[in-house]
Image (cartoon, one colour):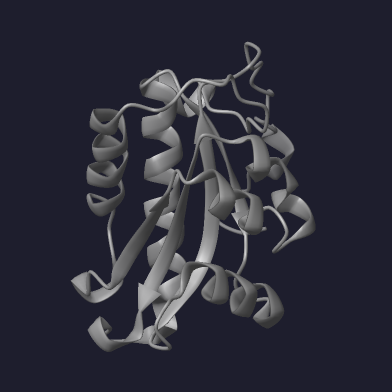
Length: 166
């Protein structure tokens, strides 16, 4: 439970590579997330190559910090594996949250950069990552060892809670 409350968005990273065993742990946690109809149509592109990270930093205004990241995981959805594409955003979101929570437990930081449903951003990511036309990029997650100690925000708001009816 502590990872849920310790997780915060991290955009500034130490110049330390993320170990392969930690990358594999992030991917295992991503694939452990629930999917609609158990369709398991999510796919992941792992990027550690600095020139590719630099290109990805230009696909969206919110992605600029990727140029200095050590790792990016692109969460994608393979239409050819889908039972229903109607739920691809929910499937990819659940997978993303698992990655971010696992990153926190591994001493890493990260942030989710939305790509879908913005068609222009989706096209740019697809070009950089050379995705086939049946694979939709959903988001980019930058990851690495935090440069500074992140401080989680207190987000609990009792005024947002309603019982039985609004």
